[in-house]
Length: 458
Image 1 (cartoon, one colour):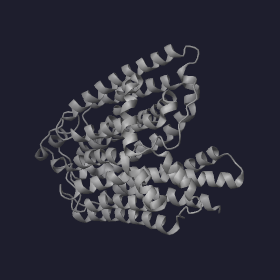
Image 2 (cartoon, rainbow, N blue to C red):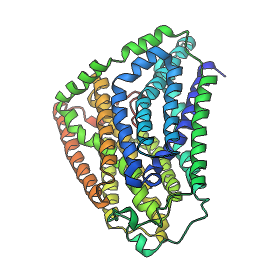
Image 3 (cartoon, rainbow, N blue to C red):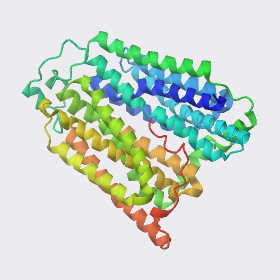
Image 4 (cartoon, rainbow, N blue to C red):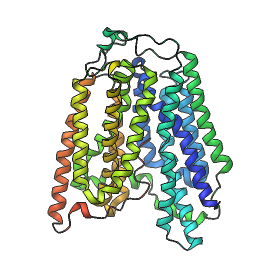
């Protein structure tokens, strides 16, 4: 096997193992650590730390440690979060969430840098186009990585379904599920009762072992790029310093199109935060039990991955406006239905319909918003995507931050209001684009988006 392709596969399977653990654990936080809202608070802190990390840590660590050891060290930050869940408290989970957030940005940046250098290196030897090889390498990576959402959630559901203390959920308990949930922890203890300590430790043990295997895979089998030291330095030099990134990010807000896209970008964080923090807890765990969370999130992950591939291909024929309209209709329909629906175990299929439609919408928000940034800000992509990461992360922080203080119906109304505002401001952006270039419709412009720009999810 060609050496560079071997390294691509090592990184891909390393990330698969790591995010199999983290993805499954993130989906369970609001249900597994629901006392005093510890789980969602840890996720809010995590994304806040990620914002800080992305500003200055990646170039420093990659320059000092190199790509291989930055990846390995950052993966250890994810393992720390798994360990913090063994004895979850404010003194263990919040610090480990900060550690994970700080390690998140260097991990993805080092991976991007490594695959880019490996692609250019092979292209030079083979006499091929560097961009073509890099895109092939990223294609292989995402093909393998995207399945992590399925495996992590499958493991959690298979383990937690072994519980021997399952009981019939009373109608009184079901009355506290859904949009008009009972805020008091004491009101619904039947459905949301946590798994036994032995099952919890078994699950966390598997997740921790998966993270350790990921680190070992990188340390043992990934080659350090020594022969391309000059190119590594060149890649690092392309990465702006903390202060230049910080200033460029906020200077970019002088562009009114960027300001108008803030609601749309934040909505991406809001809608993902709602599904992971609220739907899993107040609908699925409350009415079905925690062992169904994994199955429901598998449905979301599978539809999300398939639709991301589909919409990425057909957007050149439909244009982004039609796709944004489809996502808006699907999300609005889901929000209204969630406001009206009273979840009941007899309606099992409905629990999967919502995440499927949510996955379809999220695929459009992710692919088309990234593409929109690439088209509008082609000459200032670094500052533009720094804004993208900043405002989407702010959406996550806010959504997880107020998760335990507001009833679900209020959060749904907030979600609907942000969605409406997003579409209004997005419409203004499209109008400005059409006005500025009447001969070239925005939908037909080439979307020059690099393979690293869509990596905003943790």
